[in-house]
Length: 132
Image (cartoon, rainbow, N blue to C red):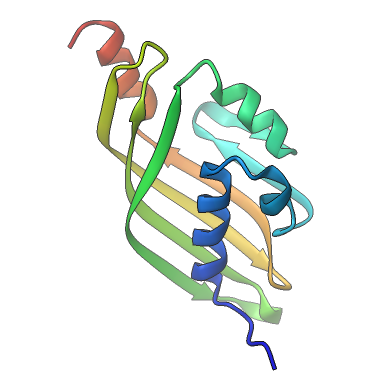
């Protein structure tokens, strides 16, 4: 008998699948009506919209995880907070690292229902563009 994975395991698997750009695999983890909200109020209903929005912002980005906090809710719903830092490359190929992030995922019926993202990427990108 298969056991259900924890919300934290689901979130980590989803984020790793997105980093690999396996959109079909990531989509299989989403509940109907899934939406993502990123810094600046950017909101997306599909993974393809997110990828297109991110394309001019960086060449690639990966996450280093410090911790996952899982909060059970009513009716089988839960919330997972993922904390850590981002590293990657700006559009010109210059590397970056140590950029703080927090992702908040709502989970319903074993699927991701909502993602909210907070990070300092824009502040670091502005510094990089200014040469500092």
